[in-house]
Length: 255
Image (cartoon, rainbow, N blue to C red; front, side):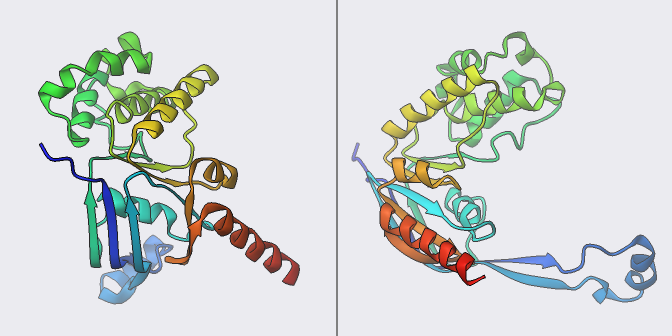
């Protein structure tokens, strides 16, 4: 079996969304205008990512920084395959594990055990490979008999613990992380942090979004600064962080 190098390539990539312009329409306005005119709520195009070129090779640890709304999380979701590009090329070779929105998408009426199965299949497991991991996932979640219950009765903390246990059970070639996760109580957070460090040491590529510049500086040798859906700067992490901080301190002084 030949070993394929993990790799990510984006060429002239664009992502646009159609959003409704005025969602603050009252019911009365909607009834009066909406029944008679299609344009009561016009659509607006948002250019979320614009002309991105990015290449990430095996062994790289890439940090993504930028202000809120700069496109960081959108880029991560595009890399994960959640959003298809509107134009341009996205090439990803390697198995991806995404750690963001991890508690979303559980089947509320299904039990914890069943959700372990569903989630794992989405991550590329097969019934055979999941058999070897299901007990370890259950044990890591510390949910015990709650796994027999429908997930809709779980507290937010329980859902996140189960989701984290499932998401981190695979050994990804490419690991996508959005913010350092706050998972459960303090003891569980320490356990989760250890699990994250293990995954990070094994993954071939890590791409991480965070507002915490020190964690990007500690974990990533290379960074990109996203600004209004474009890559404003790409390079060694200390240089990119310094330019980013300088930009905001100058902006503050100018104000």
